[in-house]
Image (cartoon, rainbow, N blue to C red; front, side):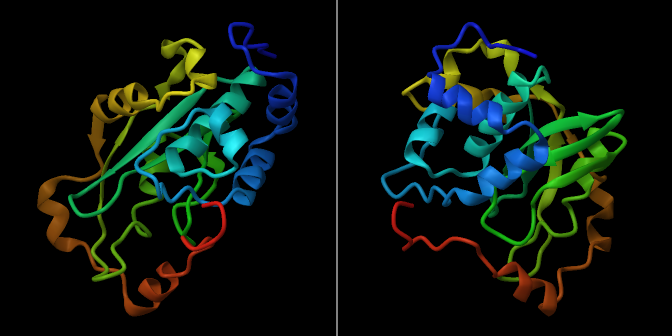
Length: 213
Protein backbone atom coordinates (compact mmCIF):
# COMPACT_ATOMS: atom_id res chain seq x y z
CA UNK A 1 0.00 0.00 0.00
CA UNK A 2 1.33 3.48 -0.88
CA UNK A 3 1.77 6.00 1.94
CA UNK A 4 2.21 8.95 -0.42
CA UNK A 5 4.93 10.11 1.96
CA UNK A 6 5.61 13.20 -0.14
CA UNK A 7 2.28 14.82 0.70
CA UNK A 8 1.21 16.90 3.68
CA UNK A 9 -2.26 15.38 3.89
CA UNK A 10 -3.65 15.74 7.40
CA UNK A 11 -4.63 12.75 9.52
CA UNK A 12 -8.28 13.59 8.92
CA UNK A 13 -7.80 13.78 5.15
CA UNK A 14 -5.88 10.51 5.12
CA UNK A 15 -8.57 8.86 7.23
CA UNK A 16 -11.27 9.86 4.74
CA UNK A 17 -9.29 8.79 1.68
CA UNK A 18 -8.08 5.53 3.19
CA UNK A 19 -11.65 4.71 4.15
CA UNK A 20 -12.48 4.71 0.43
CA UNK A 21 -10.92 1.29 0.10
CA UNK A 22 -12.70 0.04 -3.04
CA UNK A 23 -13.85 1.66 -6.29
CA UNK A 24 -17.44 1.14 -5.11
CA UNK A 25 -16.78 3.04 -1.86
CA UNK A 26 -15.05 5.83 -3.75
CA UNK A 27 -18.03 6.14 -6.08
CA UNK A 28 -20.49 6.07 -3.18
CA UNK A 29 -18.59 8.91 -1.51
CA UNK A 30 -18.48 11.06 -4.64
CA UNK A 31 -22.21 10.49 -5.12
CA UNK A 32 -22.86 12.11 -1.71
CA UNK A 33 -21.12 15.34 -2.70
CA UNK A 34 -23.11 18.11 -4.39
CA UNK A 35 -22.02 19.11 -7.86
CA UNK A 36 -19.64 22.05 -8.06
CA UNK A 37 -21.51 24.42 -10.38
CA UNK A 38 -18.57 26.86 -10.30
CA UNK A 39 -20.78 29.80 -9.37
CA UNK A 40 -17.79 32.02 -8.65
CA UNK A 41 -15.92 30.99 -11.81
CA UNK A 42 -14.17 27.97 -13.29
CA UNK A 43 -12.31 25.74 -10.87
CA UNK A 44 -10.11 22.68 -10.89
CA UNK A 45 -9.82 22.06 -7.17
CA UNK A 46 -7.29 19.76 -5.59
CA UNK A 47 -8.47 16.76 -3.57
CA UNK A 48 -7.77 18.72 -0.38
CA UNK A 49 -10.05 21.55 -1.47
CA UNK A 50 -12.78 19.09 -2.51
CA UNK A 51 -12.69 17.42 0.90
CA UNK A 52 -12.89 20.82 2.57
CA UNK A 53 -15.53 22.46 0.38
CA UNK A 54 -17.64 19.34 -0.09
CA UNK A 55 -18.56 19.96 -3.70
CA UNK A 56 -17.07 18.56 -6.88
CA UNK A 57 -17.30 18.32 -10.66
CA UNK A 58 -16.03 15.58 -12.95
CA UNK A 59 -12.25 16.08 -13.13
CA UNK A 60 -12.12 17.12 -9.49
CA UNK A 61 -13.93 13.92 -8.55
CA UNK A 62 -11.68 11.87 -10.81
CA UNK A 63 -8.60 13.23 -9.05
CA UNK A 64 -10.04 12.46 -5.61
CA UNK A 65 -10.71 8.92 -6.83
CA UNK A 66 -7.21 8.63 -8.27
CA UNK A 67 -5.62 9.62 -4.95
CA UNK A 68 -7.78 7.16 -3.01
CA UNK A 69 -6.67 4.41 -5.39
CA UNK A 70 -3.05 5.56 -5.13
CA UNK A 71 -3.19 5.21 -1.36
CA UNK A 72 -4.16 1.57 -1.93
CA UNK A 73 -1.10 1.01 -4.08
CA UNK A 74 -2.86 1.40 -7.44
CA UNK A 75 -1.84 3.78 -10.21
CA UNK A 76 -3.63 7.17 -10.23
CA UNK A 77 -5.05 7.17 -13.75
CA UNK A 78 -7.44 9.52 -15.55
CA UNK A 79 -9.34 9.07 -18.81
CA UNK A 80 -10.44 12.07 -20.87
CA UNK A 81 -13.51 11.72 -23.09
CA UNK A 82 -13.51 14.40 -25.78
CA UNK A 83 -16.58 15.65 -27.65
CA UNK A 84 -17.49 17.79 -30.63
CA UNK A 85 -17.84 21.55 -30.20
CA UNK A 86 -20.97 22.43 -28.26
CA UNK A 87 -20.72 19.73 -25.62
CA UNK A 88 -18.48 19.29 -22.58
CA UNK A 89 -15.66 16.79 -22.25
CA UNK A 90 -15.84 14.34 -19.35
CA UNK A 91 -13.06 12.93 -17.16
CA UNK A 92 -13.17 9.72 -15.12
CA UNK A 93 -10.69 7.79 -12.97
CA UNK A 94 -9.59 4.41 -14.26
CA UNK A 95 -9.00 1.27 -12.23
CA UNK A 96 -8.28 -2.37 -13.00
CA UNK A 97 -9.42 -5.60 -11.42
CA UNK A 98 -7.44 -8.46 -12.81
CA UNK A 99 -6.90 -7.63 -16.46
CA UNK A 100 -10.14 -5.66 -16.87
CA UNK A 101 -10.81 -1.94 -16.70
CA UNK A 102 -13.50 0.01 -14.86
CA UNK A 103 -14.14 3.71 -14.19
CA UNK A 104 -15.20 6.00 -11.35
CA UNK A 105 -17.21 9.01 -12.49
CA UNK A 106 -18.73 12.15 -10.96
CA UNK A 107 -21.65 13.41 -13.02
CA UNK A 108 -24.94 15.16 -12.40
CA UNK A 109 -26.85 13.05 -14.91
CA UNK A 110 -28.27 9.55 -15.26
CA UNK A 111 -25.61 8.80 -17.87
CA UNK A 112 -21.79 8.85 -18.00
CA UNK A 113 -21.59 7.13 -14.63
CA UNK A 114 -19.58 4.38 -12.87
CA UNK A 115 -18.29 1.46 -14.92
CA UNK A 116 -17.77 -2.03 -13.51
CA UNK A 117 -14.42 -3.70 -14.31
CA UNK A 118 -15.52 -5.73 -17.32
CA UNK A 119 -13.72 -3.95 -20.18
CA UNK A 120 -10.70 -5.52 -21.86
CA UNK A 121 -9.14 -2.25 -23.05
CA UNK A 122 -9.34 1.47 -22.30
CA UNK A 123 -10.84 1.97 -25.76
CA UNK A 124 -13.56 -0.56 -25.04
CA UNK A 125 -14.41 1.25 -21.80
CA UNK A 126 -14.41 4.66 -23.50
CA UNK A 127 -16.69 3.33 -26.25
CA UNK A 128 -19.18 2.22 -23.60
CA UNK A 129 -19.98 5.90 -23.02
CA UNK A 130 -20.71 6.66 -26.67
CA UNK A 131 -24.38 5.74 -26.91
CA UNK A 132 -25.46 7.83 -23.91
CA UNK A 133 -23.22 10.84 -24.64
CA UNK A 134 -25.61 13.16 -26.47
CA UNK A 135 -27.09 16.66 -26.47
CA UNK A 136 -30.52 16.73 -24.85
CA UNK A 137 -31.56 19.56 -27.18
CA UNK A 138 -31.41 17.47 -30.36
CA UNK A 139 -30.14 13.99 -29.47
CA UNK A 140 -26.87 14.35 -31.42
CA UNK A 141 -24.25 11.95 -30.07
CA UNK A 142 -21.09 13.92 -29.40
CA UNK A 143 -18.29 11.68 -28.10
CA UNK A 144 -15.47 11.42 -30.62
CA UNK A 145 -12.18 10.49 -28.95
CA UNK A 146 -10.50 9.46 -25.74
CA UNK A 147 -7.11 9.78 -24.12
CA UNK A 148 -4.96 6.89 -23.02
CA UNK A 149 -4.61 5.99 -19.35
CA UNK A 150 -3.18 9.30 -18.07
CA UNK A 151 -0.86 8.72 -15.10
CA UNK A 152 -0.82 11.47 -12.47
CA UNK A 153 2.41 10.29 -10.85
CA UNK A 154 4.32 12.44 -13.37
CA UNK A 155 3.10 15.52 -11.48
CA UNK A 156 4.55 14.46 -8.13
CA UNK A 157 2.32 14.88 -5.08
CA UNK A 158 2.11 18.62 -4.34
CA UNK A 159 -1.03 18.95 -6.47
CA UNK A 160 -2.98 16.76 -4.04
CA UNK A 161 -3.03 19.48 -1.38
CA UNK A 162 -2.62 22.56 -3.59
CA UNK A 163 -4.66 25.67 -2.86
CA UNK A 164 -4.29 26.70 -6.50
CA UNK A 165 -6.46 25.44 -9.34
CA UNK A 166 -4.81 22.56 -11.16
CA UNK A 167 -4.95 24.00 -14.66
CA UNK A 168 -1.55 22.48 -15.51
CA UNK A 169 -3.03 19.01 -15.13
CA UNK A 170 -6.15 19.80 -17.14
CA UNK A 171 -4.03 21.28 -19.94
CA UNK A 172 -1.67 18.31 -20.00
CA UNK A 173 -4.58 15.87 -20.09
CA UNK A 174 -6.39 17.80 -22.83
CA UNK A 175 -3.25 18.01 -24.98
CA UNK A 176 -2.22 14.38 -24.47
CA UNK A 177 -2.63 11.96 -27.34
CA UNK A 178 -6.27 11.09 -28.03
CA UNK A 179 -7.68 8.27 -30.13
CA UNK A 180 -10.70 8.55 -32.43
CA UNK A 181 -13.53 6.16 -31.64
CA UNK A 182 -14.57 5.80 -35.28
CA UNK A 183 -13.59 7.13 -38.73
CA UNK A 184 -15.21 10.30 -40.01
CA UNK A 185 -16.93 8.43 -42.83
CA UNK A 186 -19.03 6.53 -40.28
CA UNK A 187 -20.55 9.74 -38.88
CA UNK A 188 -23.46 9.55 -41.31
CA UNK A 189 -24.58 6.20 -39.91
CA UNK A 190 -25.04 7.39 -36.33
CA UNK A 191 -28.63 7.64 -35.11
CA UNK A 192 -29.63 10.46 -32.79
CA UNK A 193 -30.88 9.61 -29.31
CA UNK A 194 -34.64 9.19 -29.43
CA UNK A 195 -37.26 11.10 -27.46
CA UNK A 196 -37.33 8.59 -24.59
CA UNK A 197 -33.55 8.68 -24.21
CA UNK A 198 -33.49 12.47 -24.31
CA UNK A 199 -36.19 12.66 -21.66
CA UNK A 200 -34.14 10.36 -19.40
CA UNK A 201 -31.08 12.50 -20.11
CA UNK A 202 -32.79 15.53 -18.60
CA UNK A 203 -32.86 13.95 -15.13
CA UNK A 204 -30.31 15.53 -12.79
CA UNK A 205 -29.19 14.65 -9.28
CA UNK A 206 -28.30 18.13 -8.04
CA UNK A 207 -29.80 21.55 -8.78
CA UNK A 208 -27.70 24.69 -9.10
CA UNK A 209 -29.98 26.36 -6.55
CA UNK A 210 -29.09 23.76 -3.90
CA UNK A 211 -27.29 25.27 -0.92
CA UNK A 212 -23.51 25.13 -1.09
CA UNK A 213 -23.16 24.18 -4.74
